[in-house]
Length: 127
Picture 1 (cartoon, rainbow, N blue to C red):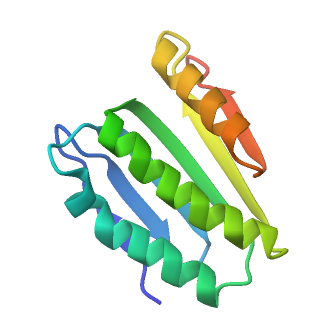
Picture 2 (cartoon, rainbow, N blue to C red; picture 1 turned 90 degrees about the vertical axis):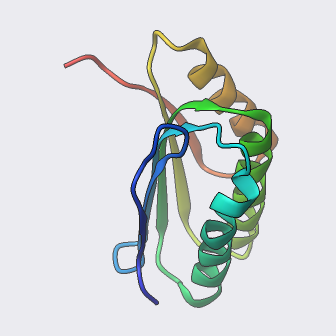
């Protein structure tokens, strides 16, 4: 399976899903008008990847902002990953947030409560 990469735009996040290392990264903002169209190939990739992979997966997320539609898309991704985890495979979700952005921490905490996944909510430390 090939890796998946998409560059960020003003309203969409950068995507780096590496099929060889099983490291999935999403970074940026997600408030496009039609998130379903943007995320459809991403959801498909994740769904296909977990069907063929036995490797531990690390999902690093650093999202500054999600609109309501994007929040629902992330729930779809977490549903797929939760099924993968419940089948006995290893996964770690790392939700990174800026301490000056209340949205980031609150959203990460909500996802952590909603899913039975190894889910870390991690404050980004200033350099």
